[in-house]
Amino acid sequence: QVQLVESGGGLVQPGGSLRLSCAASGSIFSINAMGWYRQAPGKQRELVARISSGGNTNIADSVKGRFAISGDNAKNTVYLQMNSLKPEDTAVYYCRMTTGLNVYWGQGTQVTVSS
Image (cartoon, rainbow, N blue to C red):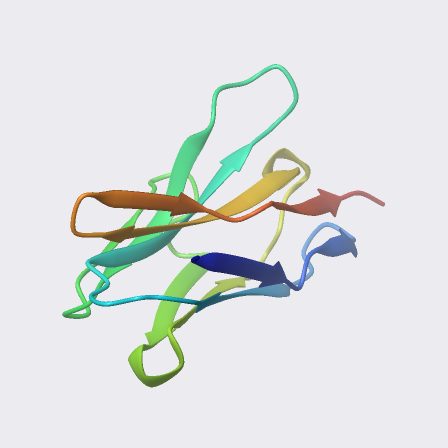
């Protein structure tokens, strides 16, 4: 059984920062990539950032220059550093992991950017 546990969400003022963490546990044999998606009310889930096991990253244009993704292979953990947050970043952020043919999702963590 594979489990993804997210942490670090919350309420922050515009211009503030948050750091999300996602730790994978269970029967994990080979991780291809881990990443973060988000879904705002009434909108589709979208990619925010992803990192491959080799360290290659993809960052959505909407957050490029403000967000950064990093990973710790030894801990099966991925981080999302979010700076200069804007109200439009408000969403539920989901961790996603791919291993071979399998895809796993976390339960989501709420990020609210508001004054």
